[in-house]
Image 1 (cartoon, rainbow, N blue to C red):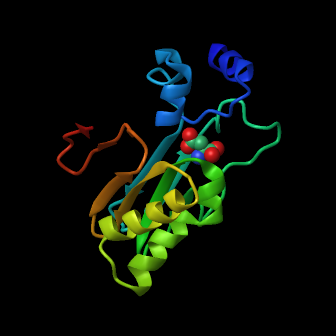
Image 2 (image 1 turned 90 degrees about the vertical axis):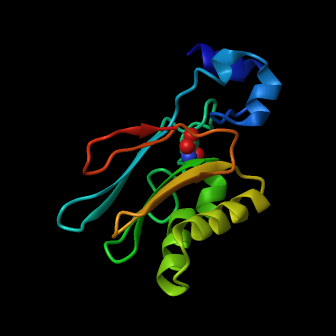
Image 3 (image 1 turned 45 degrees about the horizontal axis):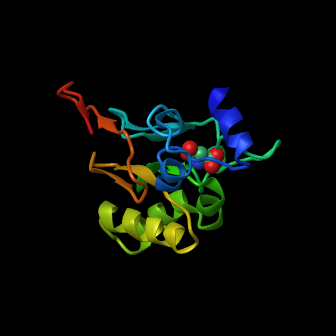
Length: 166
Ligand code: ASP
C-alpha cells in the first residue's frame, strides 16, 4: 500500500528491481523490499514440463491492465518437446515480443542452446526499452536463468534435493 502511495505521488508505474525505480525513488522500500513476481518451471519424472507465474503486475498499473504473466507465449510457455519458460519484467514488451514462445521456437527450430535463445529474446525486449528476466528449463533438465534487469532472485532444486539460490 505504501509503495502504491509513493508511486501515485510521482505518477509513475513501477517495476520491481529496475534501476530506473531505484534512481527515481532513492528509497529502499520501493526497490529492495519489492518482491513482486514469483515464477516457477518444473520437469517431473514422466518428462512433463510445466510453468507457472504469479504476479501483482506493476505498482500503480492502470486499472484493468493485463500484463504478460497470464498470457501463454508471453509470460509463460511449456512444451514437453522443447522447454518451459516463466518470465518477469515489463509485461507490455514481453507481450509484444512473445518472449516465452520466442525462446521455445528458437530451441525448436534453430536448435539454439537455452542461454543463447534466452539472451536473444531478452535482447528483443531490451530493444523496445523493456527489462526483466526468464527462467527456462528443457526436457533434459538443462536450465538457464537470464535477465537484463539489475537483479533477479532465483533458485533451483533437483533430484539431489540441494537448493541453490542466487
Ligand atoms: N510481468 C509483470 C507484468 O507486467 C510484472 C512483473 O513481472 O513484475 O505485469
